Image 1: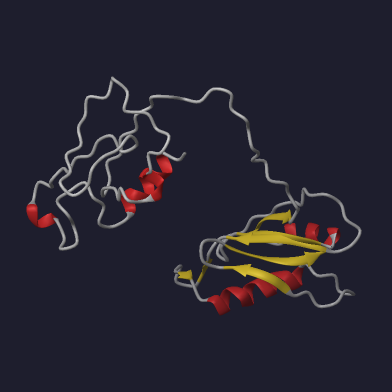
Image 2: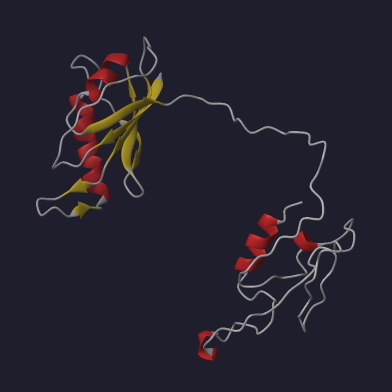
Length: 208
């Protein structure tokens, strides 16, 4: 059996779609997605129970009269609207024709496309600058083991009073805000990170 996801338009409008998936003899998982629901005043309905009630209503419209009652396997109502149910090919095609349905998609198993690639030549002497909340130099991400000294083209400096740069963190500088009261009690007038954001983004950029 396949699962299908259905996408729906708001209750105030209507569109039709068609099923363009593989053919199956038995019911399969099907994805159904919808746009947000609206009340009579035109406001978005964000009530979970109301969305689920509407999904069940739409599902029964596409169910064959001689088949067992369909149930919703999964449903979505926050970031996007939709649900997953087991439908036959005929039911999926019928669902695609229900007013308000945007699309009907088979839930297929897919293989990851990312694979390990052996690189013959690595970049060298690349200097990356990050403007953020600072950096926490004690993090293992910034261990300079195996790194050679900074390249000759580096003209910067390490302007930090509470830590020392190394062959990986080759420079640091604190830029004060225009208004001193913009700093919170947790902020440090130093390149040292006080929130963790700068440490996170920097370690992502300079991944090793």
